[in-house]
Amino acid sequence: MRKILIFLLLVLFDILSKYIVFNYIDLYQFIKITYFFDITHIHNFGVSFGLFAGTIPALVLVIIGLFVTAFVLYLYINSSEFLERWGLFIIICGAIGNIVDRFINGYVIDFLYLHINQYYWPAFNFADIYISIGIIMIIVNMVKKIIKS
Image (tube, rainbow, N blue to C red; front, side, top):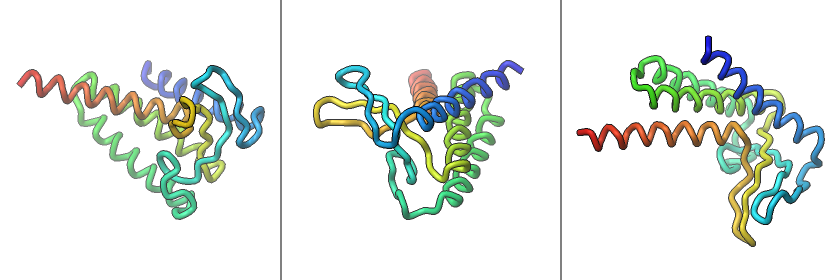
């Protein structure tokens, strides 16, 4: 029951943040927060970092996302390791957030933008952060297993 609540909170937070950006920030507008961080409004028609934008239809990306999420769910169900299970769980939350966004809009809304002078990281969203944290947790778990053996 606790994980269902966490799942709902994470996914709803991601969807709500995208809703706020969509409705209150103009497309391609940048709002400076610090010298290295802006809030923006970008539509990502591709996969991670906008790769393959415009070359793969949104519905195909939704279907691929669902298959990948189903595989991650399978791994989650069959994992017995605490850190790995939490990592997989958080990845699922992020994947669902982006799948919902892509299904509703045909693209994913990205709005967190990090940069230093002319160097920048592509815009991302909270779902992307969840996926990244989950991957880090899985890597940490793998490293711990290697160190133990």
